[in-house]
Image (cartoon, rainbow, N blue to C red):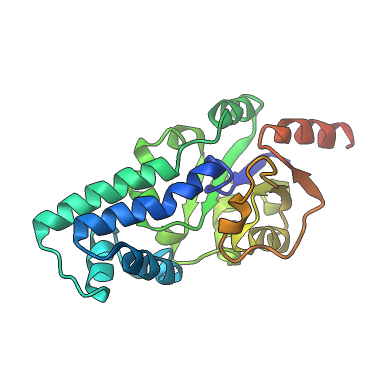
Length: 234
């Protein structure tokens, strides 16, 4: 196994930060002049379209959703809303404790590292400035590709960009978006991160996976032990 492909939210990010998602979106609503609960509902219902790029970038997305809520923000208000929304998104993508050191360790061990994320425009736009970017060899974003997990094209794209056959890739994620089912179909070896230390975090996952992988870990740092034991058993 030469490569490891990670899910992003709730896997590389701090699962507890997911609890900030509603608060941060409602802060954007306040800047736009939209009733917060109405805006939150509109953002939630538009999620399947937003993550495949149907609404465009963050500025166009916020304008479109605000209009759905009966408000047409002017350019100055929209500028402030975009800044607020990006700041909120940064809070939600706070790294999981210790995960950056884990990525550094895996790279030092010779693994190629990839990413497949069902995400809207904020992550794609901010990615080069994140602490993750220099550590991930091949990031694949649903917003950019126009497909969402478990679409096999995402897994094939990640493997191709890493230059590794799918059969030589681990896929590590917390189980949203039926991602492990997709990884298995793609020929990868899936690993479930249970997030056992984060009560309630799993309930925030969209379209949870009914397939339960053979390999399960509670924390991402347990992956190092799993990789070692897998190698020893060969």
